[in-house]
Length: 189
Image (cartoon, rainbow, N blue to C red):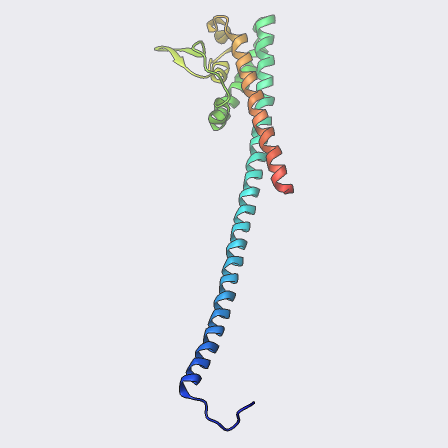
């Protein structure tokens, strides 16, 4: 039975208005909560995409640094081995000087990265004015001013030093390769 023309009590009116206001508020709060979640998710996805892109960019830069360093290192090793086997020639001294200049400029930038893979050895030192100066195996290859001085002061440690540096470079490349594999898996996923 439908009542018509009967006034609704003030208490019922307040209750109905309160229920209506509660529903509207609940709906608005739910929409706001969803919007905040979506916004937070979008921000998180954008940050993750940026970090992934930066990680891949850092890996590309490290790969480029490794390739350039390895190419120069290989030239230096060939030059040192040639000088040790054939004797020091004037053109070898000039080639060593140019390679030494490159290493003196570029090695400090990657020293921390490559030294993480390098095993230290007490024989990795170079003669200085005030006795032997401690350095790592790579620095011991290019720190002396000439090939003749390096071979004369080497004390028979050149082959061991070359093996340690080669092992360090192989470990560095393996580290890069592993991270590139992880980055490509993340990029595909």
